[in-house]
Image (tube, rainbow, N blue to C red; front, side, top):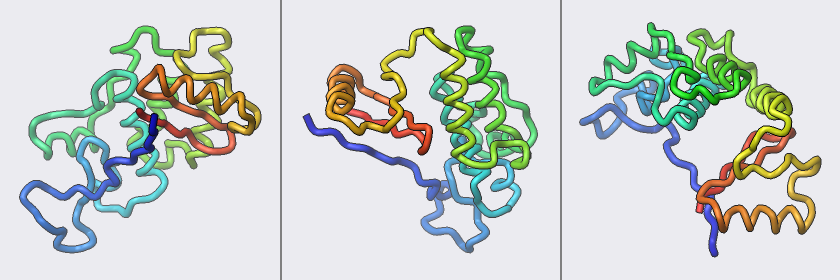
Length: 180
């Protein structure tokens, strides 16, 4: 087996029909993941990345993005003005702590979001600890040292052979997802 880590969509999408961005202040990004402050013309920063992470987590949990419409302008308007429907409305089995994290990432005001990816990672770790013995899907127990011994490497390889997506979490770094 060969495994590849793929990163997609670096926020470099352009509006339909445009082959280039006329100036640096032009809006660039995939409309479903754009933070409200980017839509309002502010520069990208950690907060806007965390908003996009919130959209991604929301989509992973519910199977859909929080705001969608056939018209891109309506989606942009939704990001600016509408409150997101709590993901628990679509998933009754969603742990409340995870819903809280997702909703905080999707706050309209960047000051109301987490300050850093490290803070998000810590909150996700705390939410995981609250779950205790609840089923964890294909996630291995979180090791104290991130894949430092041969046994952990073998465990990850076995997971990759049986699952199409394996997520590895580390308290000192953000998460890494490997897809077959």
